[in-house]
Image (cartoon, each protein chain N blue to C red):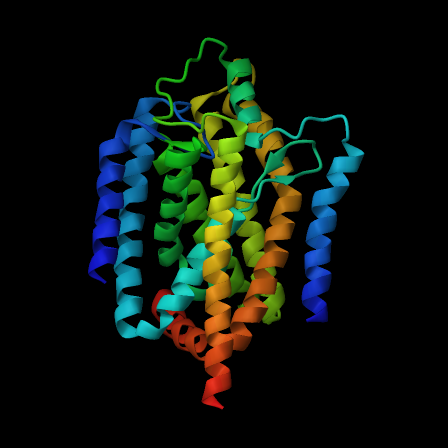
Length: 91
Length: 248
């Protein structure tokens, strides 16, 4: 348990430090930056197709990302709960 | 099982239909059409292999269903976490390593596709036209690297946990190296060609990804510790089955 906490702590540190050492940066997505590199190399390039549907705003996008994460977390939590309960009742 | 079949069939069909539309790591419309189709064709056999392999595992071992759902859920969670990185941009881990190491690389080829499809359709993250390319880099290369590195490390008598860390870490990192290669093939620089382009793309993707890959490795170890404690039986059954089959 102690080890898990240490490992998770390192993960948090790794995510937080960049916010301070690069506090003037935007922290946009790396995929967006890659698009910029493409434009730099070939400035005539036009994406030949667009997303069928895109979230209308950053808020809606964060909603869907939160749903994605909570859906996953729910399944993982259910699994562990199930296993722990089963182990108890087996004893 | 029937529902599952229909789901997978649906995904496969949408994959075929959407051959000229994809996107997750490489954004929608940012690969030339021929390459989109090419990557789809390369990815397809792995997806089918993944489907067959999941079916076999579930048939042999109905008990492993829950574990299977959990490793899929882990990919879902990790790919939703956009984490800040040292160069001032954000990216997210893939979560592929855990499943690839536990169940073998075939399984995560299919699970990765499902997550990529979700993000392409609902989040405009990646794309339908670039789906094959993204499946190749994340779900296929990521899976095989994570699994291969883990196997190799174990052979070298490195402890299970460190082997898992190395597998997940390198699987994540290589995903983005491959993404950089995929982009640089299609966009060679006027000066320096593919090599110069690769350096540009890699400095965006791989550099951002390095600390995240470490995080992914650590999180994978944390969840593995939990799984190995509470799903001992399931893991040993699948682990043994797969290890022997896959290496043979």
